[in-house]
Length: 264
Image (cartoon, rainbow, N blue to C red):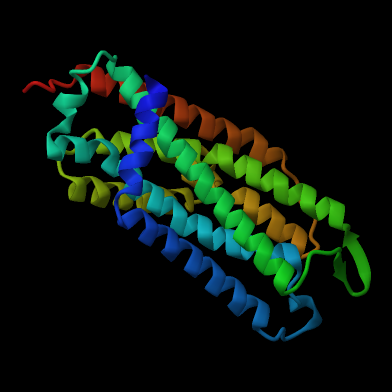
């Protein structure tokens, strides 16, 4: 049942126009940022852009726009069902409410992974066509080899995929509190911006999942500048905060759905 419901979610989304517009905006913003950075003349030798730096800049831009696209899609997941009245039709089927929640979440997570893959691959292609993928060299000294560069790009991509889980669950949770898609989307965007701002506050950021979301890509940018980097704090605080947030949002959604009076 969950598999079939997930398939239906993809069919519904593919029949609408706004997802394609959101994806186009994300990729256009990423490509424009990368090309502008690649074509800009460096002021000093220390400002010379490297492949991993360019990839990180583009992926960071794509991820930032993409996250808000996911908040839009996720917030509309349930709010649109309530607004159109299809929620009562769905629950007539022989399924449990938690299965419906799980199916929508699986759909959103798969969508997020697809978006991340698109951003990563576009970044890889742009770097290959401009600066090229090679060793990180500063003042004719090889600081990081090509193998290390690719390893860290893959690690950053994998960790970012995990860090997107609470974003998806958070967006879907917001949609359970509104019967208007516009109100749900507006609230999700406002809360997303607020969480990012709260994460920027010193001393509190490590507890907020939105704060950690962009840090894996930031580590690749640090590598691209030839600086030393460590994953320790990110794997400890970031991974823990994101997985805990994801679990809380998932349970919260199920409890919210189970207690809702759909018939009323």
